[in-house]
Image: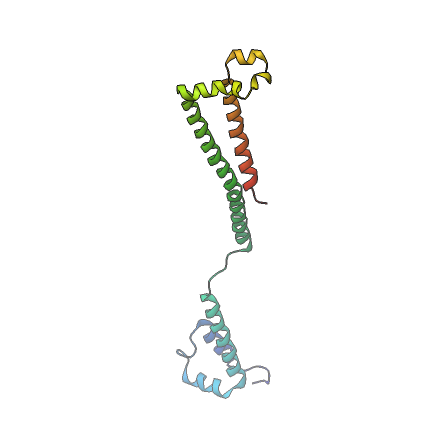
Length: 167
């Protein structure tokens, strides 16, 4: 036996590597390990490494950094799409409401009372002086009111979209 190695160190190493220590160890080798400092240190260090390996093997595996980055990018894009979609949805709902109101107004224009009121409106407001005579003969006020209401509906939808957009 030299001061740097032990003659039975190889046996102890084989038993430790195979996982047979101390159950399948002969009693004389166990006594040798208790008396030999080199072999007892070998057993101590090997058992510490084996227990550390078992503990780390039971820990949950983390995903790769690339997969985490990819998921974060997907979440960021989804949030951006949702952020963009909210004002558009609000503008669409507002435009739909305005369109329904315009459609109701058009249906109401078919009634004699409102039709006569709208037909009388330019004369009551003296608007005849503002537009050409050909316009008043071609279709009356309905040819101006309907495009004006459609323009209001489109512009109001645009205003709602621009006002609800958040930077």
